[in-house]
Length: 123
Image (cartoon, rainbow, N blue to C red):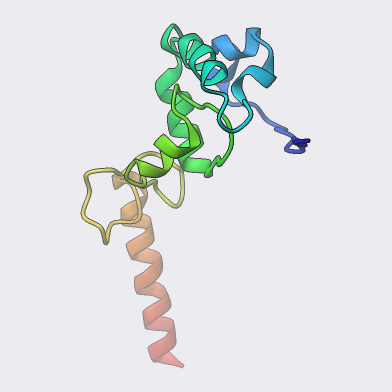
């Protein structure tokens, strides 16, 4: 028996527009090997307007169970890991690997790093 214990305290704005919100939640958490159930859930996802946001949410939050954005757990694991700004969470895919912040927060992060370095040298 599977127990789902996560409580989402603050739903994302896009979640109210998701078609799965109007369906049985169990449909999106099928038993392993239930290919027909997976196909039914993915069919709902293909008609959903917020499928991309849903998939991005699952990748960002490391969702390991269920159908999210029309993708199964196995399909999501096979996808390259998305990268997000450490401050605001906006996607930074396509930026060099060493980049950890979006352009908005990169300047502030550099300034904070420089101040910390100068404080260490002064001590």
